[in-house]
Length: 137
Image (cartoon, rainbow, N blue to C red; front, side, top):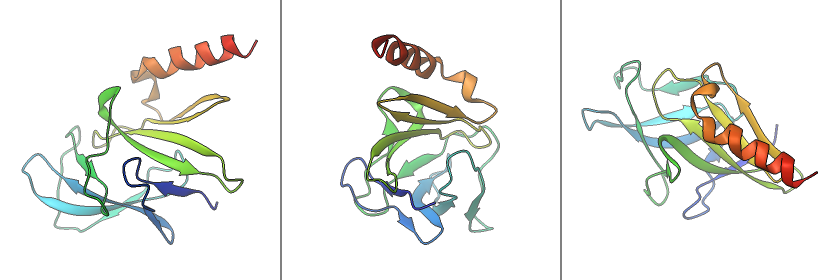
């Protein structure tokens, strides 16, 4: 699993070792770092034990390099980053910024791969995938 993750703004590398690193902020405007597993669909994470957020809380994600907000333009509940696979192919990754919600979308020219038990909540990816399938026929 040698996927690299980049900020869509500065194209800085977000992956260090076995984690993708984000600067985050909770609803109380407290700041911290969040480390996510780099495997798409693996929702394990690490944060400081004193940094808290509640299930269902919307967490703000920022690039730790350029400090730009990583909100997806298409939906305020999604975070957007870029992924470069081992073959050098760039794909867009979108995932939920709602604490406890498991929704991830891997978007490439071949289509959309949705993972997570809550991925049905963001229907624009289903419509986009159907359009890609239609255009490829």
